[in-house]
Amino acid sequence: MAATERDGSALAGLLQAALALPILVVPARAGAATVGEVGFTLLGYKEEGLMKVTEPVLWGDAVIDEKWELSASGVIDIITGASPQLVSNATGKPVQTITGASINDRRRTYNVKAGRRFGEFTFSASRAHSEEEDYLSHAFGLEARWDLNQKLTTLTAGYGKSNDRVRSSDNPALDEPRYTKEYLFGITQVLSPVAIVQSSLRYARGQGDYNDPYKLTLTFYPDAPPAFLPDTRPSSRDTWAWTTRYRRHYPSSDATLQVDYRYYHDDWGIDAHTLEGAWQFPLAEHYALRPALRYYTQSAADFYSPTIPRPTPEILSSDQRLAAFGGLSPSLRVIYRNDSGLTVEATAGYVYNARTLHFGGGGSEAFETLRAYYGLFSVSHAF
Amino acid sequence: MRILLLAAAALALAACVSVAPYQRGYLARPDMAFEPSAGTAEALGKTYSAKEAASGGASVGGGGCGCN
Image (cartoon, rainbow over all chains, first blue to last red; front, top):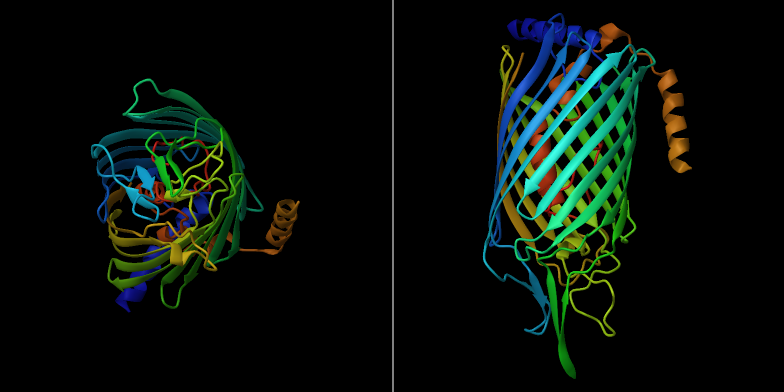
């Protein structure tokens, strides 16, 4: 009985929030002049035999006077370890080789976004900056949102531009541009009192330097001198990403189904599918558990090859991220949320990428299995 | 063209849905949000895109990085 009353009270609070805010805004207490959330997340990621990433993220968002929407985040990536650089068939078959000094890089990035509501419309602008030793990125975004049909439907249109510089810690002379323009159209639709779906189409056209300055290919032939080729890619890339996300709550078990699907296509010949499903259910008072499984599969780029064919092509990359492979990533998250707005999350996950997981078989023979573990800790407070 | 047809179908479906404001309490739950935690989404999204060819989601203006 007590549990029922507690659930009813919590539901009443959420109901107030739902009445006051458009469906795309994070739930918060209604009636306050300023509502929002601040949080800190720490990611630890470790690949077997390769690199290690530590990533602290500081983030927050707020709605002021039900008119202004603000959000910001700051991230530092601390990357150490080794990264494969050379693909060679010296041992008979092409394998990745780690060359040179181990990586020790830091990436600092921030994002800020501000929006203003005008009745059913919200217009926002965002700015992003990312800086590391061998890459620099300045980006901005413009977004328009239209809540219609009594806020059951939201249409979103966006435009973004990124001006990047590609550099190399091995070659101080390298400083090449890469420009990207992005276009987005999305729809969010309430399907029922317990179900909501969002579908977005993003198109991006990039031009500039896409070569990976650290990737090399060395191929030995039985009847000719060996060939050596730096990573050489097309100077443009058109990409499409169609993302659909579905949420369905089951009041009888107080559980929620979360399903995300993304179809990706680009003019390098890559088609990729990402499907992630999660089931969040209560574990005890204030605690919930969220097991999730992510599946990913991609085809190879047209110019991917672990060896240099003859005659030597103008563009070629042996980077196995452009190979045909698939990946499975299970994870488990424990969530603690109390009535004062404090949320603590702990996530453990595993990443397994292999050629045998390519959908329908036919993964690239030279793809070397990647095994990685990660842990995520996040604490946030809603106000 | 297919996308436009899908969008038109979605809008037609939207016109048929009726959920009164007082029925929207469950929709405001944190676990019904598309990105419940901005920090988690940012950290995991970048980690996956550094190991895969595909990238991009439901937003624009995020900028690039040297990881891919």
